[in-house]
Image: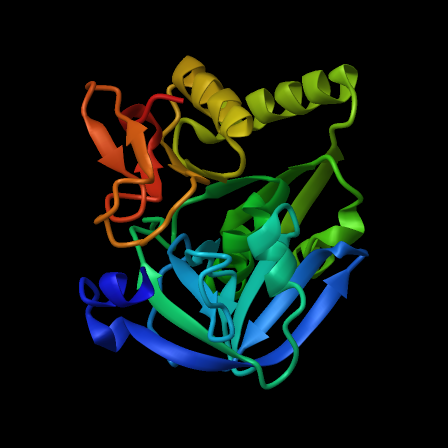
Length: 263
């Protein structure tokens, strides 16, 4: 599969990078992976496909991850261990090589002078790490973070040191209702002049989309979907569009305007 996919990719986007470090956040299930910097120009919201060189046929395909950041330390990826692929990735060590193709997909589009409301659910926090660090006017940013697991598993602390940020743990139905209330208030406040950028699991984005429609807020959503190739060839990441046309999350997204996709 990797060879077949490589035939469809601009090979300048595909490289082999060594692991610089792999750190655990809060528990063994939350991982911060740093690969040697590929030196790419990238847009927050874009992603990479990762496949360690040691993999043979099991696991079979590469795994997609948001680009959290690319800086002097390297290419940063955050993930939660949820299956076989991420379990194996969590066992990488310094010097292990990983086949990487990217940067892939459509990232967020925003103006530096416009007020931006960043809404993250769970590991949907990842693409906002680099966005907040590289934004020339962080005073124009506000982050609302909803999470179910312990906050120590996420890179939230570093973000609240850089911009205005709030976190809400949603373990109960009452917690979820409170999060929805806060999101509604914030989205309504940003609707007239600002823009909303959101990333997280489908139920979270569905909530954001509904509130954005209610308050007529300009909103972009970054979808979390299963992918195999990352370049639009396998059709494994197709999502339904509002106009009934299917959309490829890897090449036409993963960032869409909220009104483009059915959630």
